[in-house]
Amino acid sequence: QKEVEQNSGPLSVPEGAIASLNCTYSDRGSQSFFWYRQYSGKSPELIMFIYSNGDKEDGRFTAQLNKASQYVSLLIRDSQSSDSATYLCAVTLPPYGGSQGNLIFGKGTKLSVKP
Amino acid sequence: DAGVTQSPTHLIKTRGQQVTLRCSPKSGHDTVSWYQQALGQGPQFIFQYYEEEERQRGNFPDRFSGHQFPNYSSELNVNALLLGDSALYLCASSPNPFKETQYFGPGTRLLVL
Image 1: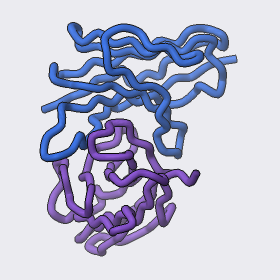
Image 2: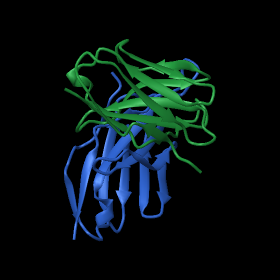
Image 3: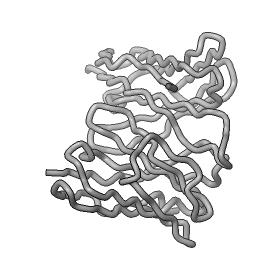
Image 4: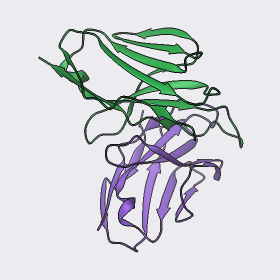
């Protein structure tokens, strides 16, 4: 069973602090890694993706991937109240059946940014 | 540039009924995937359509079926509804079946009574 594990939280950080969200995955063949943000009652919104070991930065967001440890994380710098949401980690496996197919999601970590 | 659209936004059905949900992919995208998201859970993959064929399928029973039309839009059908089918149904599109980055529509919230 291919699994993606996340701490469900809630993770509470003060405004202006760094929020650190973590994710582990079970299948060593996992190929690509995604972070989605989901506000309550809304659909997931893609915020970052990473394919290679190391860090990838986009504005206040940094994704970190360590394939040897099967670990991916998301750092949010200068956290703002608008960052309060559930963050979903997702991975894909190598393609089969003529497509890249499905994202495998964790249950998400709820982040609360307090003023 | 229109994003992924889904209809209806909300739906209430009773056990045993059948439901059809609809999705139009983002402009320029030809691959559509469907996901089910139960309350407090991450989305779970149902199936993916490309070139009007089901390409991959997740661990869902045959009660869940789909279709893709020549204009790339897609339908998800669920027969013999169960209470446990109550969830947010998400459609995601991508430019091709090997492009892993998927963009989600707003979802259809289904309640089965």
